[in-house]
Image (cartoon, rainbow, N blue to C red; front, side):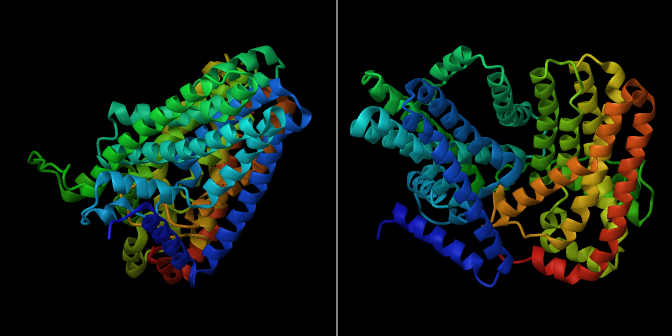
Length: 532
């Protein structure tokens, strides 16, 4: 019997259903995700249907292409930073099966369209069909419906192609390669560009916004969502041209994805090359533990974390995306605000964003965290060493972000205050995520894709991240209030106060999470070792 797309869909549904059995937390997360997706779908449908209900064709010509482009960029941007991709069908598990690449790609693409995000996106974009029907009748509605369907396929294709390519690049330990950095920068720029577009729209220059929408409508991002409006405006010739443009883009994305999927199926063994190390007289401890770490249990564990964060693909993906997003978010916030004030509020979110990488720190290890549990490592030492290993990369990145933000705003004298704000938010974020990492850990699928999530895992990652961001924003509000009230005086007294605030918050979080880890060690091991 020939394998078809429906077999992949049935397998995806079966694996999802099996993953929800006897896993109460997964069922709860699935229900919460479905409810949130339904709310987002209703809001999106209402927003896209509003121009048709008001019979405002020009408003539709602006909203539909820009909204559609934002949806496509969201499918590309959010999996890289927050939610990951649901890879219940791991391509590596099909490596031993005699499947043509075309069949595999079609099946995986169809499986990607069977899920809560795809259904919610399709339901939201049906509002565009409603607008097209009100403005141009049944013919325009049919054309817009075809565009919405093609746009959904484009969303799934761009998301899987980019995450698969990024995963393939990160599989190598040579993360300094220019291709990886450029790919991470391109992915992280998409979200800030949306913020910049929204900030530009607030200046009420609608003629310029309309011009941008007209250009976006002829790009693969907005073309599928503007085809019905072309029929309404009497430009029937534009419909096949835009359809061909989108289909060609999907074809190129699928071709790119098929190349990276094949390398993912082969695995890392094919790319491994024997390396010869020069003979050295250094002792083993001196080779493994950096000089800036003490020669004790804490130093050994911290040195291990330093190596893991640089060499393990999931961790390295978090580092690269955080660094790029952390640089561009304050930059665009400063540009949108005219560059007259330092974006302290945005920096608080960036500092918390750094701590989010540790929200599921034990999930990275899986069953390997049993070694420290058997050795009887105290919870405080375990958590402190993990924070130290991660901070070896996050700390310099935060200081660099403060430097860039100070130079962009034209106030280099505020760089120490900005650095203090970042470190305070980072400390508060650690105080939030350390207990969460013990209580709300979840297992990660065994795959080479660093962005892969099991069913429910993507929502768990997103909720933990949003909770940490909100908590850090509220906890650092007193510092921002002091900066506003004291003015230039805060430039002198602010940095040490902010750093002390963050250190105190981290110490409190460590004091709470350490004994919690001692009590819940076996339960935590069982949770992160669960079969996916």
